[in-house]
Amino acid sequence: MAAYRVKIRDCDAVACGYRCQEACPHGVFLAVPRTRNRARHAAEPRYRVVPRFAAFCDGCGECVRVCAADAITVLAPGGAAVRVP
Amino acid sequence: MCEFCEKHGQGNRWYLNPENFSEKMMEDRQRVRTLEKVGGWGIDYYIDFTSKVTQLINWPVIGKVVKAIIGRMAPNEHGGQVVSLEDSLQLLEYARDFVLLPCACRKLVGHRDDMVCLNFGPIKDMQRRLIPEGPMEEITLEEAKELVRMSDERGHFHQVLYAKVPFPVCICNCDARYCTSLKQRRANNVEVAIFKGHEVCAVDRELCRFCEDPVCISRCAFGAMHYDAEAGSVHVHAGECFGCGLCRSACPRGALSLVSRDRVPSAAGRW
Image 1 (cartoon, chains in turn blue, red):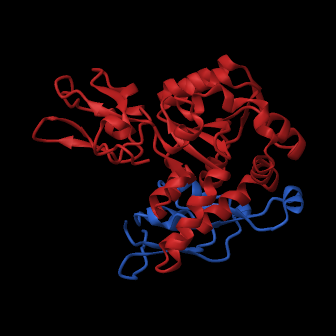
Image 2 (image 1 turned 90 degrees about the horizontal axis):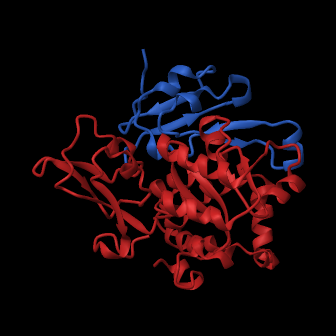
């Protein structure tokens, strides 16, 4: 399994429309609820996206390109960040 | 025969034993708790929690302990096994109260709203009680069968989900890109997340001529097929095969078939 690492900071998935999830061909990103309380969560759904399945990342960089907040960094096995044109 | 069938199958596969669908199963309090946890607590919390926990398996020391604990607990909780098209059609005969719910994996991993999660049994009442505002669609047995067939055509494999073995509650029409159980199994080696099916695929080398556009290979979600240059045909790595049968439905020459897992040495006993 390729050892790409994916980092996300300050993600507000509801605002951006889950672009990284739609772009990722390997389903690396998982939306997790922000609140711990289901009753509150139902009234106001708040999710953030975490790279829970980063083991499947092949470093294509699609997520970096589509992220509205430039919050995603993909690190190649050597530690260098994947750059997209 | 897998471990579940030996215990609960009565000579048949566990999900094809009509007794396992009976209402009596809901008398088990642990089972009801599991269902309420997944349904009421929220499937998003459940997937978040389980995928976080199974990640610990990759940790050096505690990984083995975590894996042992998960292996013990999972059959009492929620999990699944891959089933072929015929088996899923047959098991639908024993079930009733079919409802469609949005697939949680597609929702949480791909942000898609696909009503393909085919639930039956107590789920209808449970969903009404716990999440009355949530989307739900009631369908008939025929519609359920049609959905399963359509999913097979589209290239979505099936798994039967249990709420505490041996009580089947759902047939998933999974897309490997989004399926969180499959991801957990492949990334973290947690076999209990999704067990392999009772069959594996076999190639008839006389019939397989390796078409120009080998749909079977592209449909395999498990990376179990590749081109054998020497033989000029497709080769199935039986140890990797989950027995979903998607490749077989796509083969224009009928060169692929499903055979019992027990009869293939490299796959026997590997669930």
